[in-house]
Length: 212
Image (cartoon, one colour):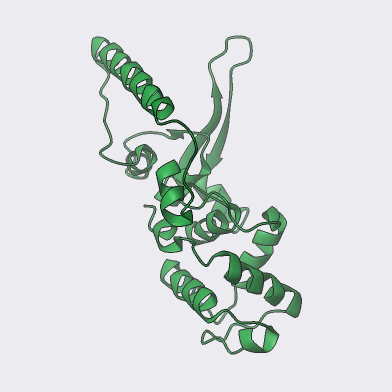
């Protein structure tokens, strides 16, 4: 994740290179021990060629596993249907928080595309910073502004809209209302979108939307 952020922000970390190397070596050692343990019990395992969460989400969406155990909500951007967060096997306080995509759709009225935009606005693996001083309430307000009967908001539309917003950089409500999508929202929301357009200049929103 650190390499992704450096690629898109241009910021170079000041950490010594030995630290991540040691962490990687330790992680690899623990992984091998886990593999040996799973093999001993005859439990099948899969090693992902890329993003581990992408593989977990694929297995879950294909109904090969019941859920993904992760504290990272980005799993839903990869297509996961069920996520276990804060999983604990502590015998004194064993607990887990279960999140279902169908409940997110039905109760919160948020689609996968909405979650992609939420990740862009609030921050995710590919864009950790998000939009400053926005917060969940503001992000949901922006998402709601796109839920217009005359708009079919999918990931293709989202990319086109954000590309227009960041390349055109409208300066005021009049400029924003010249958008080619026939999108009409109240002035207070337009002001929020204007700030989003400035802050997402270097955001790799296409990569975020392609997390699947």
